[in-house]
Amino acid sequence: MNVQTCFYEGDSISKSAAKYISKALKVEVKPHSSLNYNEPFIFLNGSNSYHHRTLSFIEPLSHVDGYVHIDNHDDIALFPKGSMKVGPASFVEFILARGKTVIFVGQNYWPYKVRFKGKSLTMLLRNNLCRYKPLSRVHFLRDNETYALCPLTTIKENISVIAEALEYSNIEKVFLLDECSEHVRLLKKPKKIELYHRSDLQWNWDSSFYPAFILKWSDFRLNMAPSEIYVSIDLDVLRPGIVECERSDVTSILTLEDVINAIEEIGKRSRIFAGDICGIYRYHKPTLNVIKTLYEKLREYIEGD
Ligand SMILES: [Mn+2]
Image: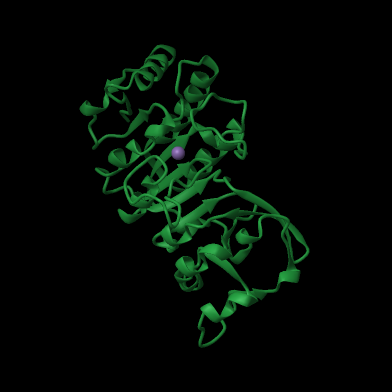
C-alpha cells in the first residue's frame, strides 16, 4: 500500500524532519498541500505548539472513527477559563465533537499520589471533565488503572459528568465525597456509585483541590475498538531526557518502548490509516532518531500485510 509522507509547507523544522526520514529510509516526501486523503499517510509535524494541525488532517477522513492521542496532555481546554478556540492544548475537544472515539495513551499531567481506601494510587487532577464531550467516547489505554479526580472548586461545573459516567461502560466506578452527595439527586443508588468520607482519602496537597468525585476508567476492551484509527504522537509523552521537546513535562512517564507497544496494541485491534508525529523544535539528532523509529512503526502498521 502506498503510504505518503508529508511535511507542513512553510514550517522549516517539519521539513527538516521529513528530509531526515527521506534520506535515512529512502522514501519520498511531499508538502501537505499535495496530500491525497484517499490514501494513507504519515505527517511529520513540527513543534508541539502546532499539534492542533492534526485536526485538519483528520477532518477529511470520514471513514476513520478512532483517534489515538499519544501525549502527556489531553489537549482539551481547562475549565473554567480555557479557550473555546482550536489550539495545541484544546483541539482534541474538536476531534471528539467530530464524532471520533478518542483513546488516550500516556496522559499523566497533574498526577496526585494519594492513599485511597487503603490503596496507594495516582489520580489525575482534571478540572475539565465536563469538556470530555461525550465522556462515553473517551478511553485510556493504560497498564495501570486510570483515575481522574474533579476538585471541590469545580464541582458545580462538572456535576453533569457524574450522570454521564453512571450511564456508560467506559467508566467502571464513580466515587463521590459524601459531603457532595446533595449535588447528585439519584432516585435509586446505582451500584457504580460509591460514597467516600474524608477519612477514606489521605490528601497531602492543596485543600482546594480535594477531590469532590473520582472517576475510574474501565480497561479499554477489544469490543470497544474502532475500525479505523488515526494515531497522533506528541514527543512530550516521553520521559524527560529521551528527546528535546518544546513543551516537555517532568510528569511524562513513557519510554520509547512503551509508545511502540501502544502502537502495536492499537494496530492489532484496529486498522491504522494515518498518523502524525510532533514535538521537535530544532534539529537534534537523537530526537530525529526517535522520530524515525516511531515513523517506521507507524508505517509497518499502516502498510499491514
Ligand atoms: Mn500535544
